[in-house]
Length: 195
Image (cartoon, rainbow, N blue to C red; front, side, top):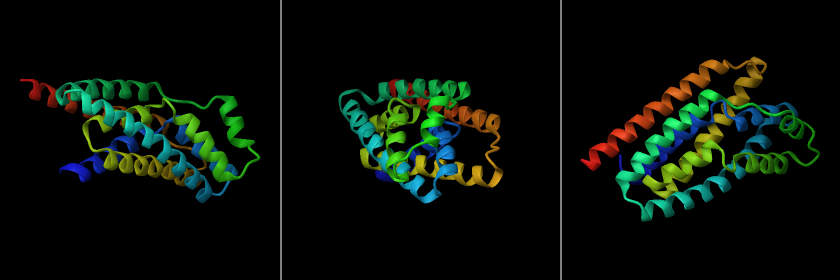
């Protein structure tokens, strides 16, 4: 796979996994208990598209000035860190839960603003920056945006079907393992390029 398709597929997979059990996924569940799912998904999509556009701009800028083998090495180490971060887990604070439940604005605006603020500096934003240093910006942006929206849509769907009883440990460990595999793969790729 080359170019756009590789960026799209890899960024979709990585961000989908990164979003599993993430704080913003928990926010999606909370918003879905108050609003209809479609406006919640539209709000998530708007916020994600904006945050990930900024992320790929940062990542593309870094990718243009740094050697690719070092980018792969740093990205691999970052992904191992994302795996550890995933194991640690995310929880909504009472204040975040209260904001998500008691907003009086329209659903799309409320969700967009909340998700935009929640994603700034989040692991999915950092993962998107990391991916954009290696892959094309458009494919990375599109794949990461679709991956995050898909993971949040899944959370809303499963959460509504199962009454908010997700197997949190299974999701957490599975996502951490996938991050670790991705990180090790990137490190091995960097070592091969350096030798």
